[in-house]
Image 1 (cartoon, rainbow, N blue to C red):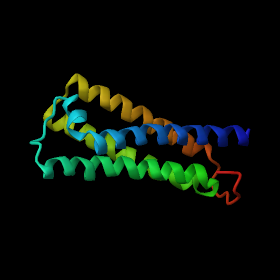
Image 2: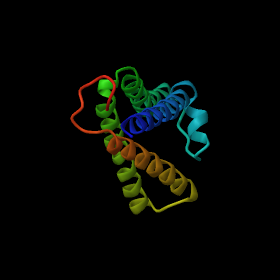
Image 3: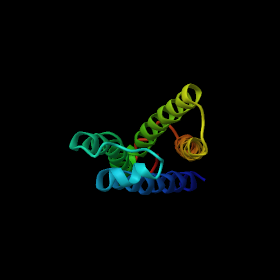
Image 4: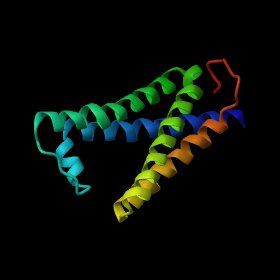
Length: 139
C-alpha cells in the first residue's frame, strides 16, 4: 500500500515537471505570443518582454526544478510536494481575489479550474506521503 502511495506521489511530481516545464518554456521562449492567447498584450519593449520572462517564466521554471529535485532525491519528495501545494494555493487564492475584484470571464474560470485541480492533485499526493520518513525509498 505504501509503495502505491509513493508511486502516486512520484507520478504527480512527474505531472508537475511536465506542466511547469511547458509553462516556463512558453513564458521564456515566446512570452508575447503566449499572453496574446489570453487577450493580453504587452508593449513589446525589452522591459515588458523581460518582465514576463523573469516573472511567470522564472516562477514556472523554479517549480519545474523543485519537481526535478523531488523526483531525483526521494528523501526530498515530501518537501517538494509541500512547496508546490503552497505555491499553487497562493495562485488559486490570488486568482479568486482577482475574480472577486475584476469579475470573471470564461478564460478566468478555465484557468481557475486547471489551477484548482492541480492544487488538489498536489495536495492529494502530499497527503499520500507518510510523514516522518527519512529513508530514500519513502516519502
